[in-house]
Length: 458
Image: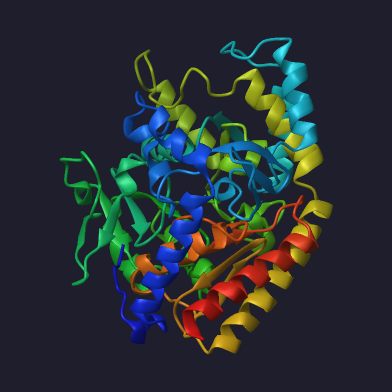
């Protein structure tokens, strides 16, 4: 992550950032004795948390959540929070949607893991095909799994060894995708990639987002099986596609016989059928995870009839054995019950209408707060996903996104919002509106943001 902290670039003096951080940290620690105690209680968990990322939030000790309902969290000390992070999209439709909870209770009486289809399986396949437009689907447990399996399937279907990714994109913990461009434009393993001795650039090519000439050049030797992309770069500062980019990407990949895999794990915020259905994209393969089962660990990956036929032929040509595309818990009855409930009753047109109405407010009013303070920032939007980006103008590619990160400033803002009762995403300034989010919560988000910005600039 870029560590640019200059006041000229960020619009905020470092001394004000430090003061805000110190004030918020003192308030956090001084009013949360049970949270502080919990920090030392998990002695046999590595770094005291069930997943090490949980220490990467802005808090001096991890927030311990006692209850998550709708779009509200309550910590072990009884403090409540308006949740605009929503599990970094995993709970896009709110915490514990009633139809999903009811489906899980029903299914629990009939088994959780069988490694065989349940009666919901065929219905889920039909729902996925109707919603996302691809005819064949598989169920996995995380978006990382789904992307890994889809990339393997693409290589098997094409007989080609390489993949192409865009600098700054994120596709979960898939090793092959942890490649980026250095400051001099050379491909390399991403800094901070832990425990990876291989040079991933041998089989992964990386180019800037929105650069069709670079895509053309990278695919010219016909060794690339698949281009994997988010339709919008979302896990850095948000980068929107330039007009014509997706149309050009589709034309180039088809001309070179390269499959196009669109990962909509973070852009399901765009609408019921994701960004691809909303904007008429035509992927060969499609992945979405996190929110697709209402917060239950599940993901899906789909493919066209042509890809399915080629994958079938590739499987038939191999000796018997494991394909490497699946895990024992993938496609479980529990997942299928949650998927069906989410697709039929939760991720509805009405839900998205509510989410987008609130996101309209968030975009408009956050833009107003930034303008009032005359800060060199802007607000980016992807459906119900809204993000404050610390650059004056919309970003073009992942390289620009790296320069729009100011970790010291961002962590101070995140913690200052938290002690004011508002939770946003920990790694960048992303906020989501869910079907459970209310206008009153948006009011509190805007008021807290205005107060924090005034502390930084007044």
